[in-house]
Length: 373
Ligand SMILES: [Zn+2]
Image 1 (spheres, protein in one colour):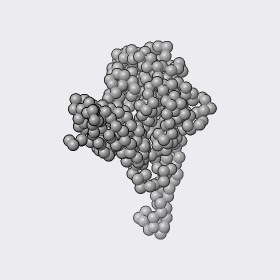
Image 2 (image 1 turned 90 degrees about the vertical axis):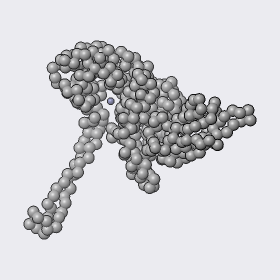
Image 3 (image 1 turned 180 degrees about the vertical axis):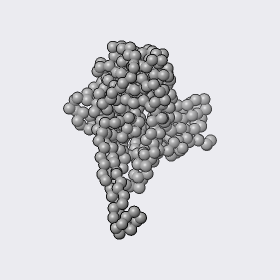
Image 4 (image 1 turned 135 degrees about the vertical axis):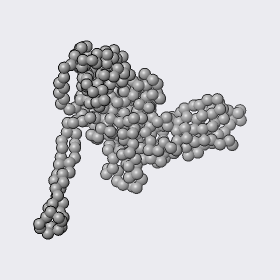
């Protein structure tokens, strides 16, 4: 949650003619205040006061309340694996310690500012403690004045840590909670773009947004998709090279260039659709399939996917066949189709597009049944 920012208000006066309560024929009777909130950063000056126990480790300060010792111990035990994970991905020394301060009420919503997290230690959930620590440790390792980098990477790292704990599907389920946060507003963007509304008047480009559903939730997906596209090693290499203090980071394309050079791949189209502009979400479906066999009896299927949305993406699709399944990835640009062929070791039955790693506006059209020839 953000609290640092500026509140801009303007007084609006409504005039009513001859209304009850006025003694002139047309006089001002109602004043309304129209306010807009513009956060100016992601770090809020924060003070916490309580009778804390404070067992201090070199790189983490755990301020717990009496009675929550077991939860504090869970956090303490989760620290080393979390730090090892963050160092492996972010590849640099942590800049100072992270702090976790306890809430008395276990149902209090967490709050964070910089590398300080306020979260209840009443629950002793070791998975959650590890994920929370990963988030703050990423902030410690990778300062950035760009919210989609600073918070987006921290939420992305949470999902990756979830994958380490429980596999890719657990991580995608974890990310799914984020999708709900921006799905409706992105559907509105998609609908507006379908009506040819001018691009610059709709949506929230990730590169400049201060809306936290975008710079946290949508950004987490964008980093996840980038990782799926270029692979762990290339993305790690790009992250290792990122320096917020570099003059380079004044260039809006700095992050794109780091990942392109590490991944040896053109990603301009992706950054245009997801970072520099808000083009809503893609909408994939199977446009056509053609199962065929070679003279030697080898089974293939030619698959054409269509993206009805205004944002392109590389999307995984899985072909189920008698005796197994195979997953491939394909780049389908906005308002476009892409075709590929896949070798199978059995008769194809069904194709499922997108394992939910790419946020989409419509997930109801993603399964295609293949009828017998
Ligand atoms: Zn954060």
